[in-house]
Length: 418
Image 1 (cartoon, rainbow, N blue to C red):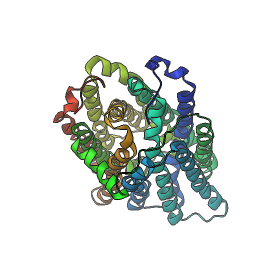
Image 2 (cartoon, helix red, strand yellow):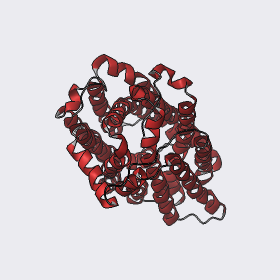
Image 3 (cartoon, rainbow, N blue to C red):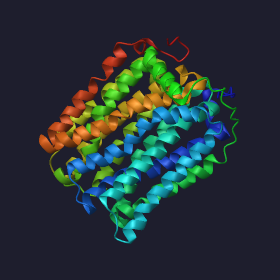
């Protein structure tokens, strides 16, 4: 699937199809912020989960990405990618609604929480595989960075307002009931996606078996110098940052003794950096080059996490310190994501987007549950603060992948990338 539009990047916001897709993702992102806070809080407050149990919950959300190897190959053979996106939204809405229903009957268990995490993860993977092809059907190549920036700005805005709103909802309604907001957001997303007209040509005739297509995806990712470097970089940074993210809510709640509302405010204020990073990423990329901007982001994303271990003092100081750390980290992740995601879209052949996304996600996101489990084990043995230091300093090593690759020299998407 290729984009037929030729409008310049500045016209994207006037493109009805892209605008509808943008609104759809924005609604869903805001709902996700509620669940990201509510799910671990259900485990911590209602089910008195241990650090290892909380890390298992985080791991199960990301474990289905290992299925991306096969789902990506399967998606490449489907004509109607939009239908898959809608199905993924509806699956996640139904699964999440089971939690408030169980709460009404006082029947929530850790097993159910684990199943919800696993099944919503499967829905997220299916959505991500189909989204790759759908994105290039809506956006011309010249607008990849700008479109990714706009989508990332919405994601950043959700991190600004979402945690604060989510924290307030959790305190006012309880964590299980607050999850209804995320379920409704998926239903809204599905409705909007159903209204986007798009031409979806049939895939080329299958040349090999599903296993052969899986192998093609892996070979593409591992042999292409840009894809290989980006994968090594993002996998490394994801492994270390998920050591921290698996424990961050637990650390803020128990060690720092912050309420759900205070945690939400800290994360929401910190997420202002993500909005700024997403908005500035195209401008910085044009000024110093796409590769250099991505490398700066790779360092700024994990490094501040090491400082989380130093948070102390009265409540307002703890909230301010957490917010400042999240602010710098959020700027970094957007400088990294906007530029690397645009680069991935540019170098991937149209007929292999699902396979590439599946192979890439299986490795990249597959490191997240591993990092979460390692974080739980380290947190239980050496303590939460030392574990956070390891996560921050280890994540900085990810930049070495880009330094040793052609990415460091790439300034624009028009340059050769092989």
